Amino acid sequence: MPDGSLRRHEFDNDCEVDVERELFERLDDGAVRTPTVLGPGFDGVLAVDVWRRWGAVYWLTVTGDGEWISNIDLAQRKPDGSWDAMSGGGARGDGWDAGWSPEIHSPSLLRVGELVGQDVEDEDGSDIELVARTGYAAAGVTAVRVKFPDDERVVQVFPLLNAFVILGPEGPWALTALGANDEELGIPVAVDSR
Image 1 (cartoon, helix red, strand yellow):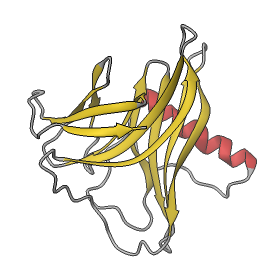
Image 2 (cartoon, rainbow, N blue to C red; image 1 turned 60 degrees about the vertical axis):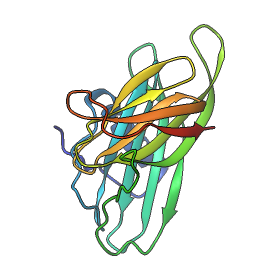
Image 3 (cartoon, rainbow, N blue to C red; image 1 turned 90 degrees about the horizontal axis):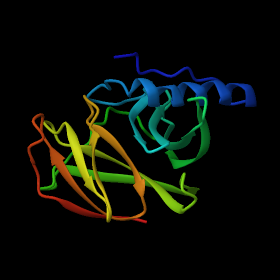
Image 4 (cartoon, helix red, strand yellow; image 1 turned 60 degrees about the horizontal axis):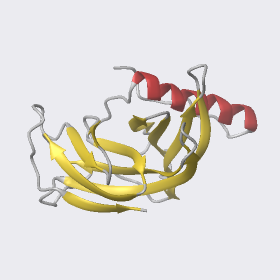
């Protein structure tokens, strides 16, 4: 797997483009193995997902002095195969001074997190409220089955932190943790992704 670190720069206009390009390249080559514990100095992609012609990149940066940014960036694939930034969102804060790893206490074996969305037009001209939702899975979970109102798919969980991001249409989703042989490991959890 490729190295997970991202080149970060002072965020002037030219550098934002460089970082954006690197983020969206992860949609084609996949996310990376993250450490099991995140702490100051971490800078990388946690998970990616592609659904139809859209992509989502879930990333985190923690500076040496404990400031952090957690973000989901959305992109649309252009006809030439490259990615065009659409929107994104997330959270930021400070005080991250120790290592962290997600704790999963739910019988679903999943911990659902941040949500971002954007109105998009599908190839047939219909409108879709595109939503990306992040989360973490317990050890042993390798994928998440997501059931949308009119479809279902399986999304990869990225080791070692076991992060995931799911891209799909807004609405009620049912998520089920899956093992290496696609066996159901936890009880399904209903998630309102609006």
